[in-house]
Length: 357
Image (cartoon, rainbow, N blue to C red; front, side, top):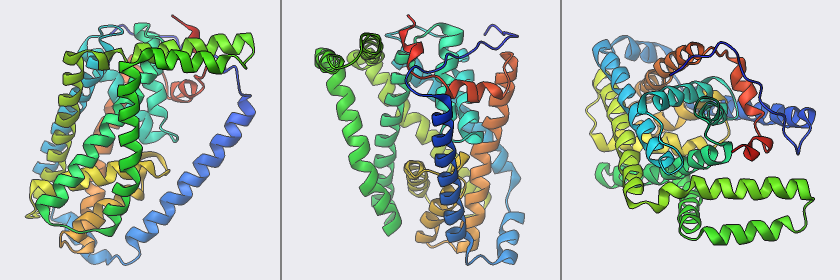
């Protein structure tokens, strides 16, 4: 990937003043931090420090290292899935996409409001000239597929492991209709692009001319971004990679269980992965701090693991999937000649870039 020493400015949005945007963002950030604090309290309120520290001290570091290395494969497969979705728009080599995916993970892990998603869309436009609307559409489609995979993991995990957890069932009951409707909508719009065009044209009748042009351009961008779902080959690649990448991540979770000497089967790892990722629907601080630990430990406790060990596991596995990709993502960002300021710049992308072609 070609490096650049100068950061390119990001256009200001057309529809919202920066002061209003920043004020609303601060409120959302505050709410997220407060929610994380609540879940941290719920997770650690009955902790026994001595048992907790003893559990961590007995971890086998070799499995931790192997797990962290294996997680790199999951990131690579995620990039391959994105490549399938983007091929109808533009073919981009796998290595540059993998770097952008790692940078996006870093942004999500460090900055609030899932800034990494905006950052990787921005970098796709900056480095590969992919219009914002197309890139953003593929990113949203990815999240919908992820949700379906997580739901299937939870169903399989519950059936195979025999675990019963009211908390997990609550997450499923909330997430299932959200992701099911999202995937259905994407498939309908991909199969019937004229329906979306007609809806957009109807909406633009009541808008000023300039804003109507923006909305029309956004609509065409979304249609173009869904093009990958119309190809049987690209769709098959997207589905296979969706399940494969999360299966690899579940293997990482299982390896960390081995590091703790926990005799749990792979189905429990699937259940943990599905639960903590669907719990990402809950607004929280960057990296899901608190929410992650609560739900990961809840699943293990439902599997018969003591609370102190379950919490120790939740913290360690969180570090394994958080720290390496965050460091690597930051290194890739600096290699491109960008700084952490680029993450906040990317969040300012709104309507205007959609006009780029």
